[in-house]
Length: 480
View (cartoon, one colour):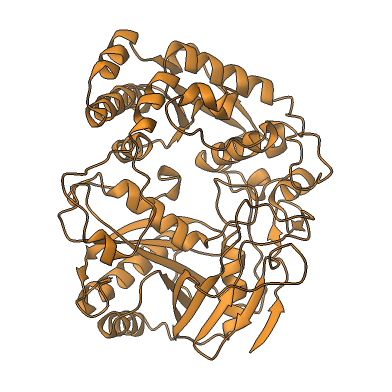
């Protein structure tokens, strides 16, 4: 067994490359800054109470001039936000694009003793105003700003649904239905033509303790990091490309597909699959796959051969429609194992499209821990090849560029299982490490999961509120 530290992948920006997202945008501009299709003025709509709309607007206006970094010896970890002009564009709004929710209607929603009913009613209040902006104005992005009182109530009863093995999900009671305001608003917004940006009060400066006094407050990032994350997401949702993977000329053009499973909101219906398709530019397309069946042998959900083949063919059909050609290579990431039928379905689908280079991988949290001398965790990028099939990759860990470990807990590595592959385990691990840097919601580059898996899970948490017949948006911007 060999252990090595993979180099931190470079990202491509407007006029140069850098390993760090924030320094890359600051020094070289976003990828899309000189593209004719990139907006120079982003028209922004607002939905919320009178107080939240005013405060978000004031915060965004002030952030135009930049947000100072928190004093720290680790200057590379939390750099200052230089202002929205760093994206070579600006934002604008007007009074008719600022929709204020009737305070009496919000008070009525809050008075309902049922948190689920409060969430459903509040979501409708937001979506009704979003529909007006969608049909009657020319806004590019809609910012939804729920008030403290609403979040305090829904957070107090919120069920944190972290992905867990389906053998445990099988014990869930249909009586324990939990609604999430963010995910429900996102699900209802899929009927719109404009993406929304959901913003909680701590993002624009309201202390977390005022938001949810009855529950443990969420950790709040420093002001500059919040500004970086918010404005980067705004730029992306308006059609800009902040950064992309650096592709070598010798690399085959690849399409990355993440497959995950989610349970319907009533926790009764069979788990349904979702695929997330990305290319090197990080451009995502969302697809809803067929229904999955929980296997009696491994207690995990699996697709039939026909459904897996259809998912792969449909995903690549969308890719071809977007890029006018098929990729030379396809990489599929799953968090549950590949059944024999799923593997056969993938192979048949790819062969039918004459795509002969493919890599099928299972990515899970690893039970194996590595330790290094001293008190700090292993370096991000630490790679251990156990054998030809299994390897371990630390995507979280100590980061030399930050000169620190930016986490609170001992990090866990990812177990990578090669099911059917052409590339070496080392090269596949390098790709996964690079894909952890493609989360448009996070400008701190050391995310734990590749965007293929992260996005597929995120999409599933939203699609569970939709019916199988309801249309969905294909752009990832609608789900983040």
